[in-house]
Image 1 (cartoon, helix red, strand yellow):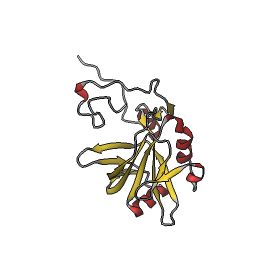
Image 2 (cartoon, one colour):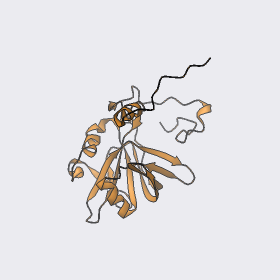
Image 3 (cartoon, one colour):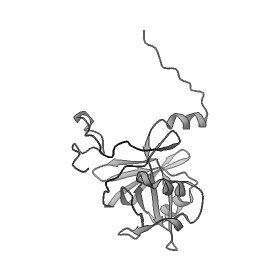
Image 4 (spheres, helix red, strand yellow):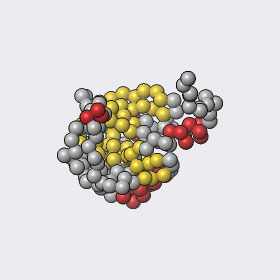
Length: 190
């Protein structure tokens, strides 16, 4: 006789958020330039690599996001992958406000989009398509330019707070993880 784990189909959005908070994610800032040439962006933990061929990523902005509306208009964005020492950057872009780049040092990508300094890496993308995702959009972007990869610890978000890896060196995964999109089979990139 098998036992089912205890669960409920009668849950609130808060309970759903708590359950999803058990999944550790990285933190990114999705950025672009508005029509006036000013940088805009927002903190985003719902980001993932989607495909190697073609090179696609996805992120999920809230439908009410003002920054998303600018990205939708321009059709271009940069994903800035934050390092552990960039908790203040994450907090700045995760809070409401208009000029989030006022205290942030950044450079321009080849397309003139904001690349935040000291990120682990960045990727410049074109919007390929947008799908409905409930109260969020599911945005699929095609990678056009990859930034340099820095050797640092990632900024992680878990259970409503920041978390750091204990060791900056990643141990290679077993061969059975070969289907993981971000696994390259060796750790020579570290």
